Length: 193
Image 1 (cartoon, rainbow, N blue to C red):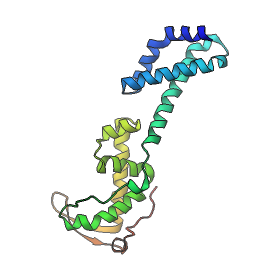
Image 2 (cartoon, rainbow, N blue to C red):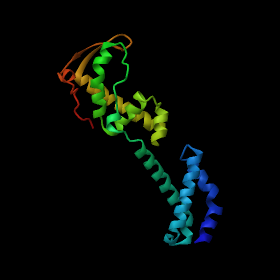
Image 3 (cartoon, rainbow, N blue to C red):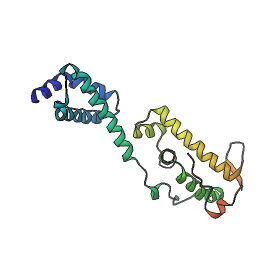
């Protein structure tokens, strides 16, 4: 078993590191994942049935290690409900924003978890869509799509709740409630899928 691990290290260290680097952004993470791969190879060496399939077996372990890394990374970024959207310490002097913020907060909190996470991280915590994608292990286009989908769901909730009057720059200048939910604090919080 020790001979197998040493042989694998010598033969596959450089190609595996390159394989992992192509799939993760951070050099240190690539090195850590490579170490994890070799630990798994050492622990599972007796499971290898045919030495002829060594290379495909090693790459399968490597792919699964990378997948596990991204899955664990997503779990670390989960949002805690009470922290999702707190009222800012200072709201702008705009009365409309002050009036609408509790409703928007309730609507965002009511979005499906992936959509809520997309809006909170990009709109409220200031991540760019690229940073959001990197943090969640998504491609840039995947991150962009998720944020746009979440914005559209929030927009539809807002439009179902209120009619907005906009200026020529598309800024809200006034709104009229279509329902009583904004005044009651329930804010049309029907779950969206």
